[in-house]
Amino acid sequence: MSAMIISRIIGAIVLGVVGVFTSLPIHQYLTGFIPDYSLSPSATIAISSAVFAILGFLITPYITIKPIEWLKKVFNKATPQTLVSGLVGLIIGLVTAAIMAFPLSLLPKPLGQILPFVGLVLFAYLGVVLFVTRQEDFFNMIKHMPSRSVKGGKAANSGERRILVDTSAIIDGRIADIAKTGFLGGSLIVPRFVLNELQFVSDSADSLRRQRGRRGLEVLSELQENEDVPVIITDVDVEGVREVDERLIVLAQQMNAPILTNDFNLNRVADLQGVRILNINDLSNAVKVVLLPGEEFTIEVIQEGKEYQQGVGYLDDGTMVVVENGEKYLGQSLPVIVTKILQTSAGRMIFARPTQEH
Image (cartoon, rainbow, N blue to C red; front, side, top):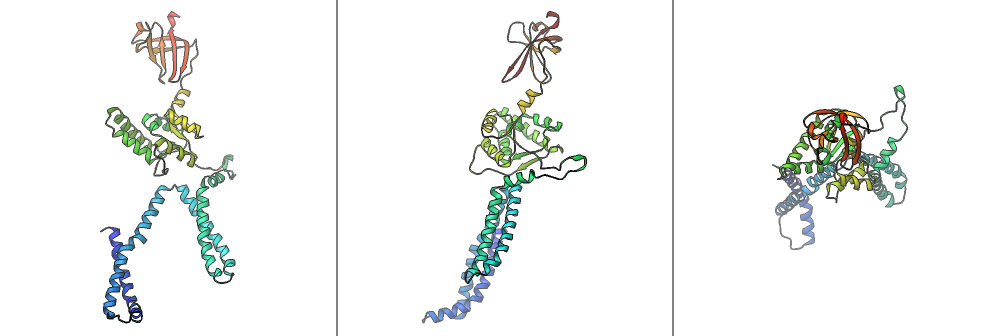
């Protein structure tokens, strides 16, 4: 039996009992008000209890179950930061109302009886609204307050870093290896709508998209097993925004957190709105091996190039190396010397020629 039906039954019983106790005053009132009123007291009791029981059966869920469900939805959507801010604001509002209650009670009647209650509701409401709407400012102020020194002269922890994760970064897969190195230094926040998008990709009819989505789910599972970098899946959402990228940007602004992504368009739009972006491709390009013209290294030629007699090989970081006259060395490792380096939007390309031919 559901809670809704149980609440209706309890409401019907309670208000039915109330109808029994109020039936006698009702009978007396109707007898004096209506001269021809001919119902007996027992009939009035039966009618009154039935009416009150039906009324209790109908309205009880709307004053018990429905408000609780509404509060549950509100609390599920609210961040812990919002809940803490609302609680602090409520306490401060109640304390302020208690201080103001005594002078307000000294006012002449009926103001002295009404205004203390009005002040209680008003100050409680204003406290919650003020602290919830300005929560970021209050938390930033607390974070930047000077802290006492600890052993070694280090400052106390001022708050853990939070990083919002985009679907493209999860599907890419390199995020798991980066997390193992410890360079992220914070908690990875995965909103529920990002997880839903990842699930949608994994259920796609396109085999390639489906494979990428399932790989992303495996990467996310691997991240959750890493104890050094906490992964938090949150139900926090943005009302009135449908696109995942826009919701991420608005959420990043609210949480004052960067976005970890590989999406070029999201990178540009977020940058225009002042949101910090952590791009894995930029990180990959930054840590690639730096080679200068004239330096020598060994490369394995694995395929033919586009031009005549060119060979192509790859460094460990994925950088393409084009070897002049390298076609005849296909499948072999040979020492080469760098002749030119070309930086493109797709990455870095190195042109070289065999050392013995230089």
